[in-house]
Amino acid sequence: MGDFGSNIVLQRPPGTEEAIRKIHNLDKPGRLEEAINILHDWIQKQHHLTKKDFSKDYLEKTLISCKGSVEKAKKQIDRLCTFKTLMPRFFTCTDAKDLAYVSENAWMIPLPKLTPNFYRILLIKFRIKHLTAETIMDYFRYTVVVSEYLKANDYVNGFIIVDDYRETNLLDVITKMNPVDLQQYMSILMEGYGARIKGVHMLSDSKAVELIIKLMKQFVSEKIAKRMHVQKSLEDLHKYVPKDILPIEYGGSERSIVQIHDELVDAISSKKHVEYMEMMNKACTDESKRVAAKFNEEYLGMAGSFRNMSVD
Image (spheres, rainbow, N blue to C red):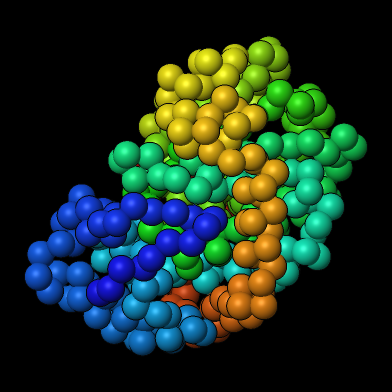
């Protein structure tokens, strides 16, 4: 397997892939290739999966997000394809520019540099003044496009989330958020795209942030709940996130968050990625070909039962 390289949006130091493979015991000669082949062969036998030609790179990144477990990788692929069939309203966007009003005011931005332990910082910031339930759903759709880009182009050990709520009316978010939509969205990101969360840092001095935490804890495992922290200032945030990774607006030495955001939007709006989104949104399931008993075991009551989130 070759080096995946870097780009201006997602930078990685040389040797990142080899180091992460070693962390997950995929560095032994032939081990990774064997796991990919097993996963590929399994996909060919799943009659309900409509896409059979996932790339080796995609399968490798799925294995990495599952800590090298082939069985967990099988479940992740099946879940994402199933989500696209059962919850299609999250997967209607292929070109991020179609949701420009969202991307300009509600950000989910992967910062360019990795942490020393190969985690990617995801900076989330809401600047929308008049929030509605449909705006939130459009934000979910937009971040699915970002997630598909990350799955295709990044190679990381997991994610550290920084939620910047300093310009956000948190009570407005809480009252406009549909809990079922939020739960399904989180399942898509964490179980479908395999986003392993190392930590969540909420930047806010508002007491209402505790209500956000209470809401989020309803839908995550106890392990992730314990990784949620409130930082009241940038100085507090710097204790957990290296300053050289953060944009200048956050007291760091990285280029402006506006520039990073614009570069991301250009990347996810490119002809190449739009065509990739169109292809991947069709990677769903034909439920008439799935074994009914297996479906009931995995997905019955899906809207209210997903609590097994992926963690380190």
